[in-house]
Length: 433
Image 1 (cartoon, one colour):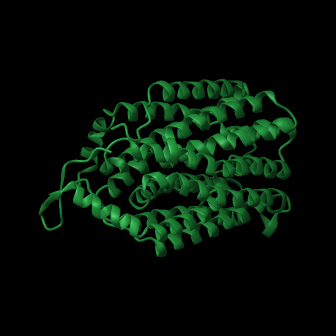
Image 2 (image 1 turned 180 degrees about the vertical axis):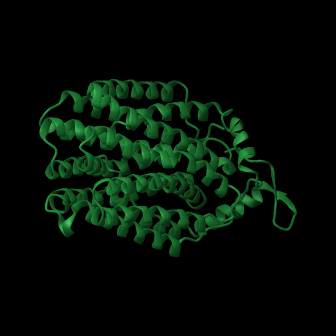
Image 3 (image 1 turned 60 degrees about the vertical axis):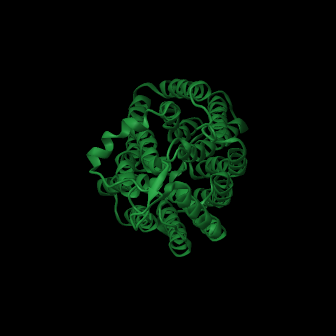
């Protein structure tokens, strides 16, 4: 990463930039074991809980149960993403001028978990229009705080974990959390939902997600040792800071990556609808939801060590490319396969999704200067969220009017376009500048 030649300390004395980064790296190494273990523990609990919410099976099935409408599934998914479209920029502006990020990260993380609890309470206590309205509002706010948390937590990782060890950390974290989540998703489908545990199986699933993610946040708050930021952006009004986005886009590879990521996000819009697509063919019930969730989450989980190790060794551009190829294979199996190939399609989609998520949040850390990381994360998340907020509504309406064919064609085209951009317009940033 390119850094200016000097930094002014708190005492106003200008020192060589190497002194600042030397002290920062020394702190990072001295506290690496503790911070690594804390990030891992927090991630396992967080991934376990939130994957029950964000897996492309349980929420779509829940919304379909409430409304019987694919368009409503699209609206709910869109609101979940819409909330995360604006908040990353607001979060980036907050984070880039703070010496310490942890208090802010814990605050937005707590608010995100409150929204999951609201889903559970609403499912138990409300019905009809009131239940749907509260559920959709909770999705909107959950997405808002999720977008803010994503920027804060990834910037925190950039401060605490060396670049060549982030992939393995994420791989182990995602694998452990995903394995537990896959098993819990199967249990949720076959027992909580099918047998209506505690009177409402979906509410029980949401409550479990809230408890697991809250444990992870407590561990993070108590365990992290965070250094002061080695460099800070001066505090600017948000409008002025947004006016500087053009400077970030002058980085050729980052600019091309944003276009590629936007196209990949178009394909990702289809994930919640593939469960409904299969359900139309096989009949949508708790057992099918549990089995598809297990296939998707188990593959998502088991692939993380592979993706993380690959990213640490040769860079996360290769991970992004591999994830796109897996997604293409999964989509082809979904459309053309039958019987056990249906479950194989969700395995391939799980491989693709895990690599895409890991590479998206890690590769962007490497395009340019350290102090611009929050806003690079914000731009990436906003592009992804913008596509993911509008897309589900259009897809839901399209399915209601024309069936699944337009979605399938658009997903294939978007994945191929993203793959082409990543191959020919985005260079591996590690060591290139």
